[in-house]
Length: 142
Image (cartoon, rainbow, N blue to C red; front, side):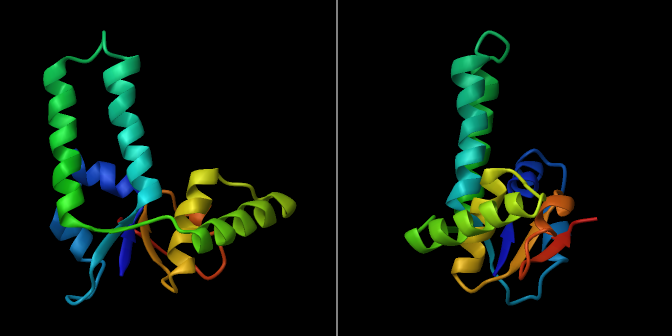
């Protein structure tokens, strides 16, 4: 399975990349997936628009974003954040802190989810952070 990082998922939703560009990074039989952590980040953006920046964004923009999220959910395998993923994520996060290589907590949670399942491939625009995580196969779209 190839996991889309939040940056790639949002770019796809907003038309920054085509599905063909994403699929060019996988074999024909490979499935595309997203973690529940990335979905949290995507929903956080939607609810920021709706509840925090509501004076700056019209309801039509909020509805359009919600529709894009629903299309994304239908297109990808969704992988939940499990207790095993929590353990792996915490170990990653604190080992990186100890090595002076700290990255965002959510990135560790995404990587931990992938690795806890025995998977390793992630497509991201945030290559610098994810390459700090051993055993993760980091793929850049461009």
